[in-house]
Length: 187
Image (tube, rainbow, N blue to C red; front, side, top):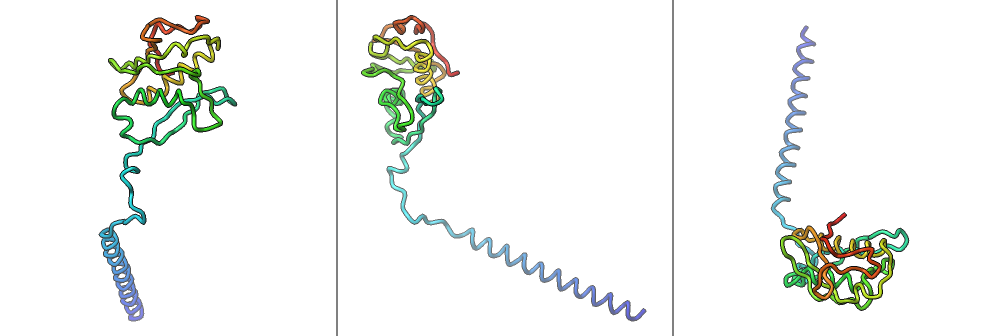
C-alpha cells in the first residue's frame, strides 16, 4: 500500500511539473507575440504618389480564336477618370487592345463626339464612321455593341447604353440588322 502511495505522489508531482512547463511555454509564446505585434512593416521601397493613383479598368475586345468578348485589364491613373470617365473608356476602346491576341471591334476612323450619363443611361454619340459603309452582319454588329455596353457597365452608375450618330437617335448600321432605337443592357 505504501508503494502505491509513493507512486501516486510521484505521478502527481510529474503532472504538476508538466503543467508548469506547458504553462511556461504558453506564457512565453503570448509574451513574444505581443512583442512582434508592436513592430511595423517597413517596405524596402517607398510607394510613389503615382503608384497610389493607379487604378484598374476593364475593356472588352474580341478574341479571334473563340469569337467571344474577352476582358482586358488596364492600369491607368485614377485622376484621368475624374473629368469624364465615360469618354476615357470609349476612347480606349476606339484605340484598341494592348494585347496583340485581341482585336478591336469599333470601326476605323470612328470618333467619339460625346459620352454623357442621364438617369443611369450612358448616351454615346459617335461620328458617322461608326456605321458608315459597314456591312458586317448582325453577329459582328452585336459584338461591337456588347463591347461598348460591357465596358461602360463596369462603372457602377451605368445600367444601360444608348447610341447616337452625330447627335441623332434611331440610326443604325446600313444593313438595318441593328437599329439604335432602344437602350442596350449588359447580357
